[in-house]
Image (cartoon, rainbow, N blue to C red; front, side, top):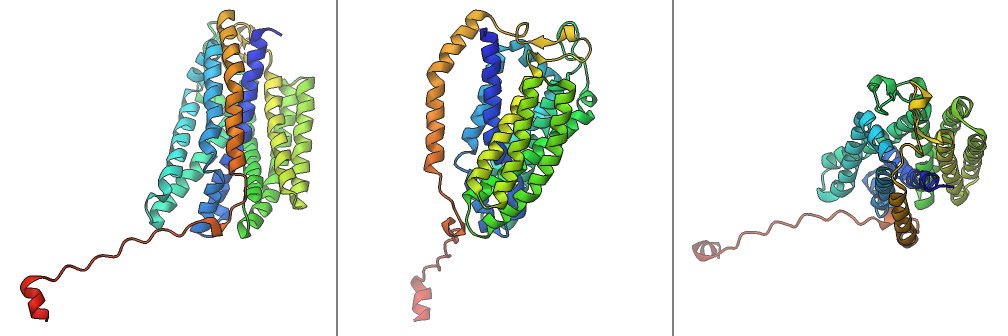
Length: 352
């Protein structure tokens, strides 16, 4: 394998890690608003991902940075052609981050409902648009001989891409429901398990159609194998959830997320961004890559620092591994009682 192939594989791994970890974050953000019966349960749902959500987004930053450094032509064409969808995703992620930080700053139901809505939309919008974006990348977009995107927004809103958005929305919601069931106790846990069954069926239907379309229209034999693994993982996760095996169910849904991402990248390779105008105009791992020296330096940096990042994130999940319930949520602090004005001078004498 050449360094260009290795870095394509590494970028695929980074996106896989992002979708695996941030996928259940999105799912919890979407479901928490509906499954929680009161504010305490909503705080439980938020606290299941509160210690880890920002670390999970690091995978996105590294994936974007690696693409910029290893495949600058891919990065330039992608971010110019997909500017509006990626901008919407960025705004949604910013609003979502603010919701985590500001929801508990004021003890007001109205304030908290608004931030709950921000968390919901900040999770749902990226869950849909990431599927739309990657489906378009696999399908191919209008790229001309100068390797520049020459299409418009409507070119991205095709049936295959919209189906991809619905499939990733269902997949991440199912993944989040299983994570919520794994990390909580009490009624919220039972409601999360019931939600997992409903979203699991929707995921199998939407995901099955999307993966079948991908393999038949754009895929290869390895992509077909990965799609079968994804379908089997989804079915097994649904069965495990129905039997109360929450740990196995979450692991199997995670396997499905990994296999779905693998299906997309296997269908894409050796292209990184196919042209729908002429295959000769497509960006590939060869013509979109940086110089060999740049890739060599990046490889050494990745070899040295990646183990530290993985170790730290694994430690974080280990520290916050236990289930939580409403009993673990402290009551909101009461505002301090107003002090009575001091009675002095003539007024004090009068009162005596």
